[in-house]
Image (cartoon, rainbow, N blue to C red):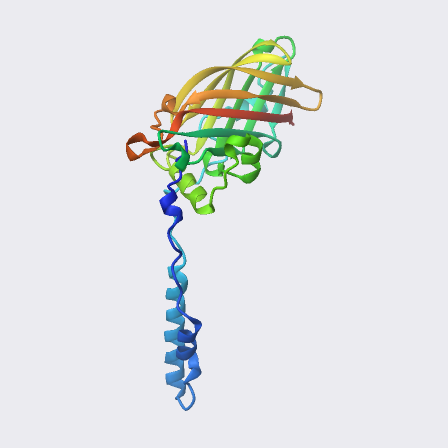
Length: 280
């Protein structure tokens, strides 16, 4: 889902700026004795130079234009959850501020030491869980997260990910990694603005259950059985666990450079904690 940084790019020098003396001479250091019209023309010229200087310092965004996402994915079963979903259970609403999904992507290839491991996190997970009172088998869930809200290599996430993520990554490299991740070759955020998750079955007895999760990324859906720890309280429900899957499962070709000598491993590791409170 992410791309390894190219260290050569980090060495590019920032564009130089003209000295203030140029603007000073144009702006009116020699305005004495000039007519009002001449002074006005000088000011216009100085303003034009200033705009050119400022414009040279602004780099156009490299990410593709993103479709502004709707509040939720098309076809999301909101009305069913609003109606209570089903008898004999409770509906919980996911709290994005208290929930987090973190993806860990690892460098690979003969020149792996030139790249970085990356974290990608979302604190925008939303949706609903239905917890059946009589049998966990009847419990369900529908969740989603907007890919435009994904955060790459946030320092706190890297610190929590362990020693494999202790290296410092320059902000320019972080920006390039995120641009590539959202681009057409990876998540294709312009056409697929959401990652969508459906809890199809829950088996076992809390707190340790197995969830069958249908995961949809960039229009492709795959099913995974995930050991999950669930705690059900009167005021909240939490679900936490880990999931490993491959980018190629969703038609994503992992980033590779230099004939595969520097690449991002196909396998990704995902950890999650979902926190939900009673709806309504």
